[in-house]
Structures are given as structure tokens and as C-alpha cells.
Image (cartoon, rainbow, N blue to C red; front, side, top):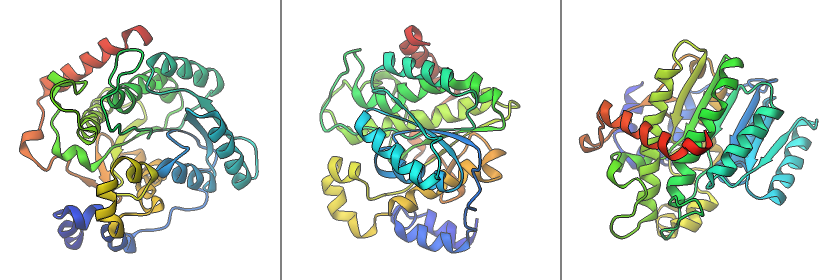
Length: 316
């Protein structure tokens, strides 16, 4: 890491905004046009924001893209767009509401039936509710979609990823996690006034912990597991869910292309296929903590896994 990069990293505004990307990217090599040639890439949350950009850029680099979406009409439109870019029809989508674990389990079965290999899994789908909401299965919406769903989907697909090795799992998190510890005694944000941004950040902190745990469990299998936070990106989700933040920071927000870069780089680069269990931002490993109060113990990590195991036991 260069001295300039270290100086940027010390400042949230310098690091997370378009400023950091513009400065750092001057030193990067372009991701080649064939970087993902014939690689089967599966992504959630592809019909909006950063996910759409990742899908498009992956296809442009040769990926055989598969994606999970909730809205069939949007999925068909994206599939047609991607097929036109790719020049072939080897683009597939699967429909599921990832807030419902019954649908996560069902879509995992469909993926396993339809995909003999999976080289890259990108857990990208998120929600940021303005109010506390619970699904029909009794889970708080942000907790269900942003944490329980990737836990269940990834675990259901692990054997296929092992069989497809070398393969990669990429978890898209958020810099908001830096403000939050695990908070295992309030997994569903039921205590006190509900704040969607806090529920979202807590889920992302927990997903970062799972990233390290998957990496440890998959050591030596040829499957790497990494997390990345894209910085502050101008997406429909940010505009709709955090309008005040969007108005305040709009001149400094990253484009979706800037936000997608490290996801694509992790999916295709040599380092992404070797290094594992780490948090990346702008193509470099970053600390997963900025506050000592957010550092968890190994016992807390294990308890998190146990809680999610219990939550998903009926669908595993």
C-alpha cells in the first residue's frame, strides 16, 4: 500500500468517495476483456444498482452469467440486455424472494439442478427498510435478506463450489459496518426505535464475520472467500433509502462502475483466487475494524454461526 493510499484510507471521505477511487485507480491495470471467459458467475441483486453494473461488466469479460432476482419482468429485461452484450443466449436467471428462506432453499435447489459448475458466487442483494418489518417467516426484513439469505444460499451451494474449484465467493458489504459490533443479543433489531441504516450495518458486520469463518472452513479446498465494500455509490437504493445522505454527499458519490470495480477484480484477478478471508476496498486489503468496540471474540463468532444454523435448520 502506497503512502498516498494510506493517507486516503485514514479519511472516510477520502477513501469511500469518488476521490479515493480516482486517485487509486491511476495505478491499476485494466481488467482484461477475457478475464472471466467461460467462468460461470452467479450473482444476487443483479437487477439494480451495483449488481446490474457487475453483471454487465462480467458478461463483457466473457462470463457465463447467472443471477437471482425477485421480479420476473426485470429479470427477463436484464437477461435480454446481457444476451445482446454477450452475443449468445447462455445467460440464465432464477426467481426468488431472498427475504424468505423457503424461497432461498428452493432457488438453491433449482441452481444446483441447472448449474453443473459455479466458479464465482457474488452475494450482493440487499434491502434497507425505512421501518421495522417482519417477513411471513418471522424474520426482520433486513436481517433476513442481508444476512440469513446469503448464509443459507452459500451453504447450500458449497459442495458445488468445491466441485468447481478453483472458485470464489465474494460478499458485498458496506462501510457502515465499521460503526457496529455483532450485537448478538438483538439479531433482529427488536430493541428500541428501529433505524434501517443500523440494521443494515449490523447485518454487514455479521456477513464480514461469516466471510472469515467460511474462509477458515474452506481452507485447502480451492475456494476463496472474500468481502468487499464498494464505498459510497450513487445507486437507486441510496437515493430512495437514504435521501438525506444522498443530498449531502451527491457530488462525492461514486458511480456504479467505480463501485463495481473491486467486485469484478476479485472475481477475476490472481490475488482474488489466492488470498482469502479478507476485506477489500479499491483492490487492497483493508482493516475490518475502525473502532475497538466493534471487535468480536472467537466465541462470539461461533455463536453467530450457531444462531444462523438454528435459524436456517428447517431449510438446510
